Amino acid sequence: MNVRQALQQRQAEGRPIRVGATGADWMGSGFVAQMAHVPGMVVAVLAHDDIAAARDAFLRTGVAAGDIVEASAAGPATDAIRAGKRVVTGDVGLAAQLATVDIVADVTFSPATGAQTAEACIRHGKDIVLVNIEADVTVGHILHRRAVEAGVLYTVSSGDEPGCLMELYNFVTSLGMEIIVIGKGKNNPLDPTATPDTVAESARRVDKDPYQVASYVDGTKTMFEMTCAANATGCVPMRRGMIGPEATLETVSRVFALKEDGGLTEFPGAVDFVQGNAMAGGVFVTVRVTDPRLRADLEYLKVGRGQYFTFFRPYHLWFIEAPISIARACLFREATLTPLERPIADIMTVAKRALNPGQRLDGFGGYDYHGVMDRVAEVFALGGLPVGLAPGAVMRRPVAAGDIVTWDDVALDESSAVVRWRRQQDALWADDPSGIIQK
Image (cartoon, rainbow, N blue to C red; front, side):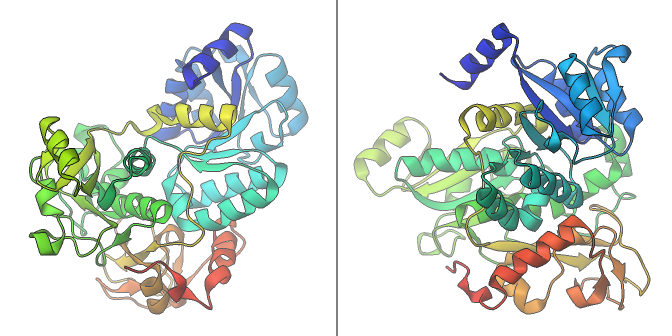
């Protein structure tokens, strides 16, 4: 039975998959909107620090006000769900405690919130799907390890580029093809200096938060996406920040050919991205094919020509695709994307402007910093602060614009789940950072 059939059967039997979700901002509310159309699934609990926003997310999908119950304890929440109500709560750990919830999804951009939600799931034995690559990149290795130890399924969802790319990667490698480069098409030209002010007009045109748009333009989001993909596949950036050449679907195979064949790629198994409108929003895998018969057939099928071919998926659908990953996880305990045993890459915090002692750093896409991807061994050697820990960190020492912010430069909230998990994660291989896969 496939996902569609299984969900339709659950719908017919009146026993939908009951999902607990964290997040009611732009992404979380969109997820709730999509879930309202998925047969055999229902968002039973929605956690957000703004209860009114969570309530409004349900109301916008047609749920009656009288069918929405606010709860902060397991008993009342369980009773409400059994009565067919929807629960809103300010406690991101509540859904993990409920027998009436089948699986939990974190649908935020926040590493702190994702870590807190996942921690509750691991503690209470609830499977967790992160629609939150920022959390996975920051603490995914330790979360996955602890989830396995607890018998809990941990996975990142499809929809964002890493999950979509993982599906394409699995397709290509299952056919035995040699991976040269995996990557994405960036939606906008890279500008590491972008701030909410510089993107304000473009954000207004698409009705998006300027911080969100700036995190796309300054490259932080791309670094998160490709680091997540690297850590799940073992593909390695060729240099700090990757290369990010201009390419089209017609040229990308030549651009990412190996250097000895006239391209930019230094070794098979790299991760990168391309700029330009032609591939924006999509994900790709470039392969090398040496079998002359297969090369001829791939050329006939218009996949490319010569010995390099690129498989391209032209879209990713954010939270709209996430229900499929959640259904696979719940129905078949199938993970879409999980990190490897050891990290391959990480993202350092780089100052956009001069940062001064006592200054509290803003969020992704703000005025203070952007993220830059590099190999883990290099990040360890430099003491670079993982960008997933930067929001809310307080500067202890001055850092000049363009310089890397280090662990020693900041004071962190040591009580927060994301900081605790990250320190545990780094302790696993602090004595052997060179054990990372090297090309």
